[in-house]
Amino acid sequence: MSYLEATDVSVRYSRGAAAVHGASLSVDRGECVVVLGANGAGKTSLVRAICGFLPHEGVETRGEVTVDGVSISRLSPTKRARMGISYIPERDKIFRELNISENLEIFAQRRRTKAGLKEDKDLALDMFPALSRLPADRPAGLLSGGEQQMLAITGALIGAPDVLLVDEPSLGLAPIIVLDMMSALGRIMVERNLALLLVDQNVRSTQHLAQRVYTMDSGHLQLEAGPDVHERLIREGYSKAAL
Image (tube, rainbow, N blue to C red):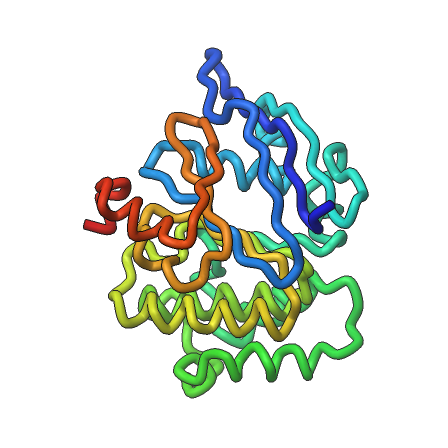
C-alpha cells in the first residue's frame, strides 16, 4: 500500500457536469508522481478532491482517499492538513497584501507541532537562496512569479507535511526558473522523504523529476509506463505547453 492513495475518485459539479471519472492514483514517500494534462482536463478538480475542498463548496465527490492506510475521505480540509497533506494551488497561493515574514508566520501556524520550527524554516529557505536574500518586509504582492512560487513552497514546507501536492508549478514561469524550482522540489522530496504529487500541463518541466506519470484527458486518468514516457508524450504532441 502506498502512502497516499486515491481510489475511484469522481467529481461532479452543479448542473451535472462531470470533471473526474473514477480516477485512481498512488504516491509513496520519497516518490514524485506527475499528472499531465491540458487545461480543463480535470487535474485541479482531482487534487482538490484529494485535499477535501470540493464537498465544502457544494461539489459532489465520490471515492476513497487514504494516508498511510488511514481513510481521510470524511475529514475536512483542515483535518486532512493535520494528517500531513499540504497543497499549493495554481492561484491564490500566498497572501499578497502581507510581507514575506508575515506569510511565513501564517504558514507556520499550520504545523502539527512547533518542535523543530526554526530548523525547518532555515532548511526551507536554504532551498531558495534568491528568496532568503530578499528583505523580509517586502510585500508578497511585489514579488515576481518565480519568487511567489518559492514563497509558497517554503511556506508549505514550514508546515512540515508528509504529502505535498502542487498545482501547475511551471505556469507562467521562465524555463530557467522552472528548472531551478523542479531541482529544489527534487531535493526537498529526498531530504524530507515526501510523497510529492505534481499536476501540470508542461511535459518537459517534469521530465527529470517524475518517477511515475499519469495522463489526464476529459476527466479520465491513465497511468503511462516506460522509461521514455516523457519523450513519447512530447513526440505525440501531448501538451501544447511542451511544444
